[in-house]
Length: 393
Image 1 (spheres, rainbow, N blue to C red):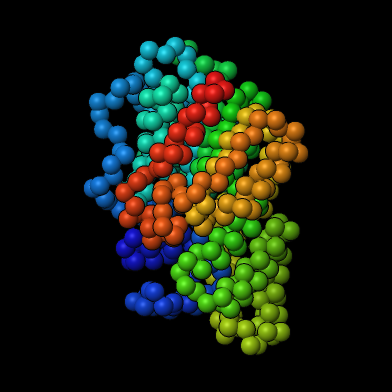
Image 2 (cartoon, rainbow, N blue to C red; image 1 turned 180 degrees about the horizontal axis):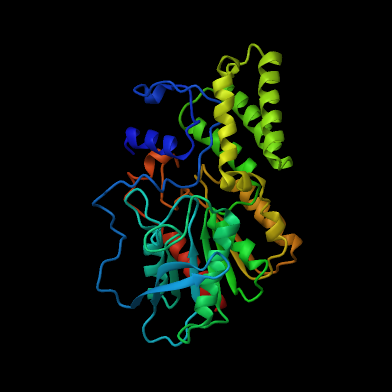
């Protein structure tokens, strides 16, 4: 990925990032900061690439219909998408694709890739109808993306379910959800309170709270970038301290007071810390900027187990072994534990060797590879998803 685009991404999203200048990016100017918050997707940085061999081209050997539906629980927001239907199959099972964090169109288009288009094409050719839609405020969908939280996005999914239930060309008893990244958090959130959901597929879905996601993600990103271990240790301590304050308090002024005191106390008590010189009033004010994002504060607080423990439908959870954004071991374990407490008897959990967060076959899993890899979505992962669904429906 072009380095200038990468910097643009960080500045656009939170303006308080990232590493001290490190050896393999010597052309970058040093950044002074504490929190290294890396979101799941790079939705605002789209890179045009000509070689995307998996991207399907018209004419399609299935029906593709542009549709719209209304979220009546959110000021009647109109949402727009595409429903693909297999030919010569009456009332097929149907999956709703749920995007990860960041403003995504119906194809989940990023870095020249269109993973949801590839998934929809593959599943529909194999007898599974697919509904994918533009996030609210994106593409042809209305509404305000910037003010929405994960809970709001869950109601958009429920609106999509109600829309499918109104149709007579899909099997309304076999409506499932396929969620990627944050979409893998939304899926059990919706399934736990909608007992008619037939199945869910979690693609790099969180199994631990957002604070743990962000701290482990930041550390792994730093390791891949060659950041010194001492810096990563200190960064993790400070990030965890701030996240814990946000997780355990809701009053904004109290949170500001506690974060300010915690950072100043850390500087006083750890004068030899590599980060102590960077703890200044300006830096502290930057950290408090986190509180301006209701989405982020909610994400830090959400516990996936609260929903996994109430999810009874069949679940397939996949994670790439080289995913640095949703670390496979702790997240798959969290998903497993939550579903066990639910007494769920139909659970399949797989860590897929060599795949990154986007389910591309990768060398290291680092974000720099995302745009360079020609593969959009692993054929192996596609086959696993398809087989798992068709074995049940």
